[in-house]
Length: 120
Image: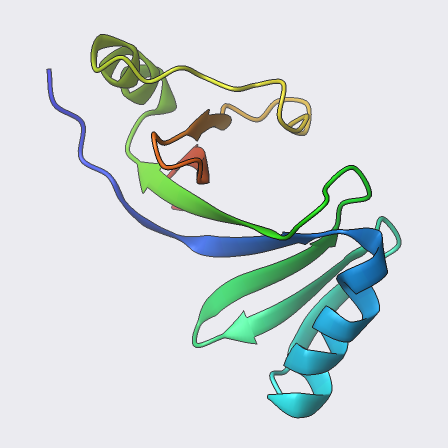
């Protein structure tokens, strides 16, 4: 079995609370990236060259982490394929919205990936 993956539209930087405001200011004021939206849950989303760069407040972290999205035609097939390759799902990392088939994995390098289906 083989599943085809490609880069998704979402990148996230999970930032400790004490670094959140400075990080947002860096992307907003210093780099001047357009803000797509701000959420009341502690996220600011920037346009990052046609991709969405999420800056997420993550109080449980001691240092920033980068999380990436990969997309595929079927998350069900991707889950089977990744399991065969020895990749462990990490659904405990962050709760996905109800009804979402997307899931989390962590590569051997420690980078978290959201595996989701291609947007139609």
